[in-house]
Length: 302
Image 1 (cartoon, rainbow, N blue to C red):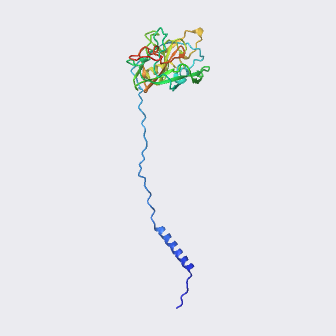
Image 2: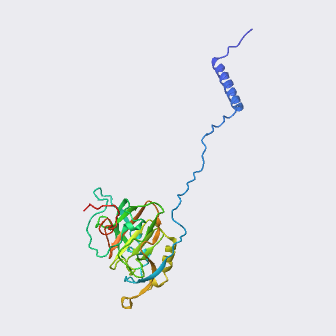
Image 3: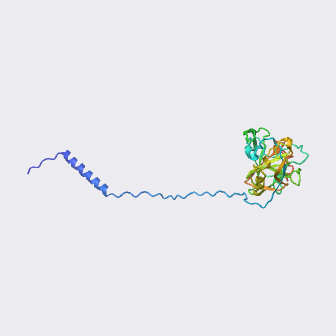
């Protein structure tokens, strides 16, 4: 019998063809691999906002008394856009000087009548912890009704606002003084919104005339007091009718409060206070002026 010799190259070709066919057939019958499952369970993030301590109603009642137009802005500058009435508009910045005395200071006193006393913001009166020391900004005034613009931090005094430690929700009151504006009232309200208020210890609707103004920021203003103020501050009301000095005295209503009357409650753990004397911001650390009443608290820093 005669056998024909098969060349090696042909054998390799046949083997390659068979291997390719078997590979294709195996792929056709293979099952796809199951996807790997992620065992992590993702839930939506729900953040509950903190409950506000600001009351939405009040049992306090407030009345208005006459205020006298004093400033010369014509048209009358809106109180919310007036940097001498709205301290939040003017703004302030922390004094982080490491050498700053973060306590009361003894500057003496030249007040014949007791000025407003910060310890009486609280009942009973107390010297709270001092948790913030700030400098108010200077102000670049513009013709009314343009509010103007914020300048640089006022260089002097080195502290013009102070943060007092509070318990959220505690009642804050009109600070007592030796002044009486008539009718057993201590102050008129120059400005109020939901978290800022300005108290004037004279009848002049101004922070620039002779007398004291106390600014309080980070307060929940009493809703009934705010409603009274908003009524008296009507943009179309008599407060915004300008009368020239020759036609004055010219008066209208603004809220008028006695010493110790609730103003609202602390919004958080710090309420910021400032005091202005005849248009000039003072150092609120002065113990023998604004802290003459300071139960159990000394004053050794000059």
